Length: 219
Image 1 (cartoon, rainbow, N blue to C red):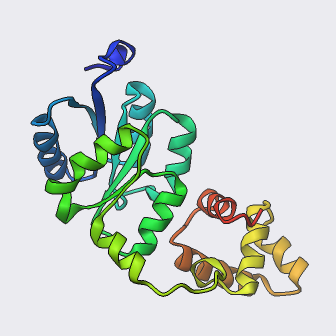
Image 2: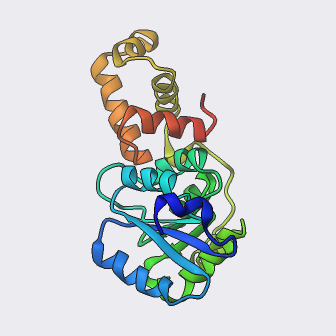
């Protein structure tokens, strides 16, 4: 199916875009999905930017998105993809078995979270549910999340109060020198806070930090 055909597809067909930076992984996933009735892989991508372009071109029912592709990070891109193509559901397929990654992905707008080790048995179900607007979480992770003790909500990702203050000002567009002046700190200290924020939040660019701040209602 070409991008031109996207508006003429069978409404009962679930179309899929595979985004993973390993060709062999994409080939294996394509074989798995092509064997399923009512599912068609319409395109592939090896990085976030290509995935976004092809989502806009093909308008697939579901984007299967790896979290750890080379280049731009996938997790912060999920809200942007959802904003650009709200009719495309996102299923994360990853080796990241940390429940916090699953929480973040679902909060960002993904409808599915599947571990790669369970792709053969879970991915098809996750895609079908996502295409219907329903959520799928790997049972292994679901069990671990349910077993975790409830703790009072605190600063996201263990950020200190000062780091939250710096992050908020970064998101508001202030430079390091402006933040240093406003907080009566040295520029070097602000740079150190910023490095800690990037490490804790796993965000590197200003745009990613702004997106993170918005996700957590800091601005």
